[in-house]
Image 1 (cartoon, helix red, strand yellow):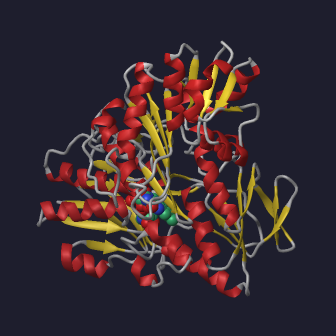
Image 2: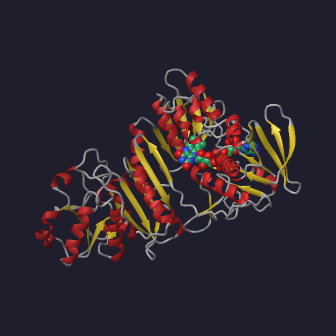
Image 3: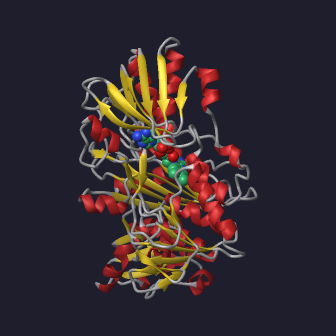
Length: 543
Ligand SMILES: Cc1cc2nc3c(=O)[nH]c(=O)nc-3n(C[C@H](O)[C@H](O)[C@H](O)COP(=O)(O)OP(=O)(O)OC[C@H]3O[C@@H](n4cnc5c(N)ncnc54)[C@H](O)[C@@H]3O)c2cc1C
């Protein structure tokens, strides 16, 4: 029996090595058109910045090491250019010599990944993607030859674009980041993305929104707004799309997203052909529709499942995808899972929102850092629809806890009952995840009614009184226009200063506001707490 795997990185190599562990006697052949297999694509930007100093650190395996340990027959510079599904053969071309051969398979696995969205060419200025070790070599070459302060235009403000910006700045490069969108990191909501933009600008990046590259002239990239930016290099990071060229030759069904359609066992519509990784549709946890999620964890997990299926081990049906992701940029960590508010609104899906700004660990223990959390909740079932966290220490573990809660189908209120590890240097007796659950429960039961930052202006215009319950010092340092300052500790004594109409209270992050709302509610006022307080409002209105 012979299994042929096309693509020798995350999905392909996970399939190959798992299959070998399950079946010592099968012939397993991997074809990779690039020069390297099993390379660390997630580490590529960090080699540009010198964080991963040794290029060799990106190369996790070689055909020789894979042959020695796993008895895999691995060919690099070998592009599979066609599939004859009826004959169960592939045509392989050696990309250096052009020599072609026909190879028979019993099972075929397509792990061909995704390619960069082709953006408009800048013409004479070198333009590279950041998807392979060869790409990084080319980028480093251009930078090395560009003089003291190379100038680079990065196109695309997603994960890879931002990682590129950070690493280029670290290298002393002058960077302009352009995006056709209206914010960085579009999977985040605007108020959560605002601090990232501030960090980018503080680090020296020139960030421009709503523009695309139209061409190049006299050493400058020309932009759709008529502007021009001097550049020695353009890095194209404006998105990826499934590489379906080989799948098309096999006649496999392509789904509505443009990715290869597979069933719960990663089988394509063509017998004996499986597909995994970035080129393949996943099923979204929330709406159960096909979606594209191009993350390494899924490629590895699904590669393993394909090997199980081929080897006759009962695989789990593919669990739906949550889109869990994390990014570190200039010391800020961004974690996200599930849907954003923007996506829920676009889908017309009802949702409730909670913002909090807890400390990463007990504040009396040195070194605590603040984080901003956002939880999106289904109002009818209390199920978690998504979460976003921006901060420093401890963001990673909180987003993973919420991802596990979502996968397990826990309600938002149930987060308050999770028994999480605590010592003062790691967390709080009420962990930030527990606190999200408490706030979620309070809003679910109506104990506290809240208002979102983007709803405030409208209710103010209709005559709602806004009460800032922070200290006079905090109020003087920056306040919501029109807000009156009644510090929390004076509220019981002074509440009759308020009119009988609706009131919105707020503090810095929402917690004193909650206490204020409880006081005023019990004293007979029609009151809501501004969710996430001044800090969320300020981030949202600055975005
Ligand atoms: C710069 C960068 C940073 C990233 N950072 C992260 C991160 O931090 N976290 C995360 O979860 N994910 C990250 N990713 C995404 C992650 O790398 C991918 O999700 C994962 O590699 C997908 O695995 P795959 O096997 O589907 O595709 P790939 O790893 O892209 O491998 C596909 C391979 O197939 C080969 N191929 C294609 N067609 C053919 C053919 N016809 N014949 C032979 N070979 C072919 C290609 O050359 C390629 O090497 C990052 C990606 C990049 C580029």
